[in-house]
View 1 (cartoon, rainbow, N blue to C red):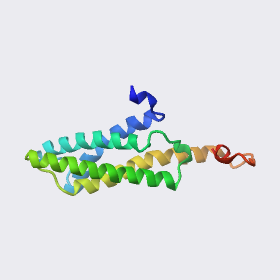
View 2: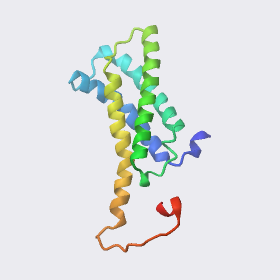
View 3: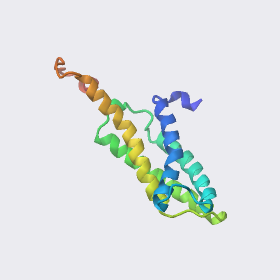
View 4: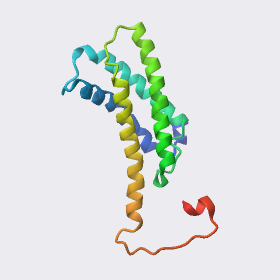
Length: 157
């Protein structure tokens, strides 16, 4: 099975949860309400399903589940932003086609709000690992410093 090759299965599951919640959060932010109006429920369910499938596939294809997030840097943030942008374009395309075929109501701003929330939560979950690892390196400030010479990429890890 393909999922068995994932190095970061917990991030895959966490992303699944995040991607199920962010469309609802986006529409609640857009409408400034605490409940989703009945008119938008059908469109929201379709959008959530499409976004979940498209984003998980895109994130997998772009390697977000094969990284060592303990050593995350600006390059990884750029990779997350690219994955969110590309997946948002695919989600927009699929949802636009579905909206042309089915009469569903959905605010157009949900694409932007959802993308920003996904970037915030997916990026935040990855970089929290980096922050946690960084804080554990020297818990009381009295850690022993060492120098590794000539080890290349393996030494920096």
